[in-house]
Length: 94
Image (cartoon, rainbow, N blue to C red; front, side, top):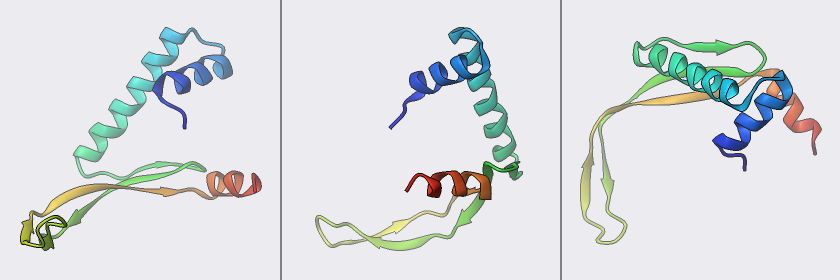
């Protein structure tokens, strides 16, 4: 599993940037995607995939330790759907 530092290293090597520039570029990308999602917009990166926000309704759950019913509040969740190019490249690795 790659972490943020490893991803920055890969970006820097691939784009021939310094690690500092690659880190700022990654942070700016994440910030831009987050801001759009907070507004409720869908972010689509052709070939890679799309991020969207969905509403999850309130529901009743169960505490697994005690078995007692609990109320789970409604909330918004982020969803990611992989694009065809990303899916294809992952499946070629089999």
